[in-house]
Length: 291
Image (cartoon, rainbow, N blue to C red; front, side, top):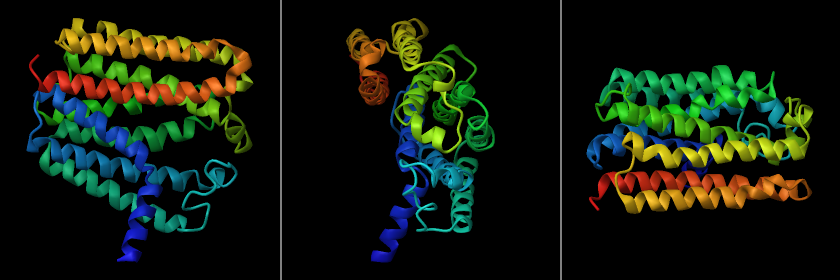
């Protein structure tokens, strides 16, 4: 029993379960916004995407194991720390991805399956290699965050080629950019040590802070326009979303002050993660409750 628990924890760590959970929540949000209910139909896309995301994260750790060993933040991960071999990690990653894809294929529809597979392919096949070439890889890489909500939407049986799902996907796309950049900026030295191109090679910290702040403002601004496209019908929910956006911008203003750059990056990264969780909760609540 103890050995089983150890393996479960190891697989979750290998699959970057925190990222997988966020991806799963965005999938659930897409389903709820499309169907306006929480039904048994939400279970297959949520489980399928969670397993697919775990497998994709595990494969990413196999792909980046040598670079991970060079960074303080990642050297204790399962493969570079020697708790699991790269070969075992590869087997686990494929098993998880096959299981997740299989669930989507059996219980959802071809559009949801295609989007789920595209997310994994884009992450492991494109973004993982682009970030070794350019520090601007986060921009095409942000497509990764915009697809899971569409998986949930498609799983509810609605077309993704309409205004509401596309605006939702656009929001997650734009949110991903400052989220990725803040992560990289928080561990910029580590990334350079591992041979990744860094934004600091193009801009100084003062400039980086201003650019990131602009993207955060853009993320917050989309909230204001969401009701115009049918996302969020309650005035109360809109007010809460607006307040969350304003708090995010206000808290992130310190990015404009280079003297506090390192602390500002950490606080802004925490703030933008809390913001996305708040938005998903409020939008889902709006779809479930008649105010």
